[in-house]
Length: 90
Picture (cartoon, rainbow, N blue to C red):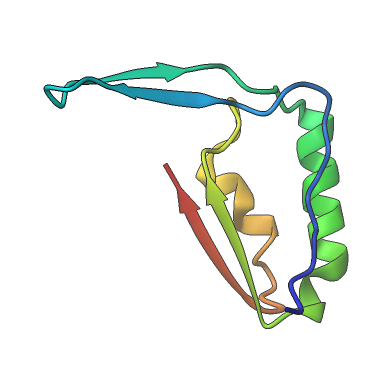
């Protein structure tokens, strides 16, 4: 498909969310904690991203940002714009 894997691996477990739906439609959510991203992990993500960003027409960053990382911190990834960067956070 031509989709490159550029995942960053950090210690810890992947976050798990479980939804239990009762017969009457009531939903109970169990949202467990995931891994933590250190400032060093985040810096590695940004530096690595900047090294390959120009190889693609578009990059999508989506999902929940790690604790302590604000959406504005992604500005280094799209400045200068080597390609279109789409950021969606929840």
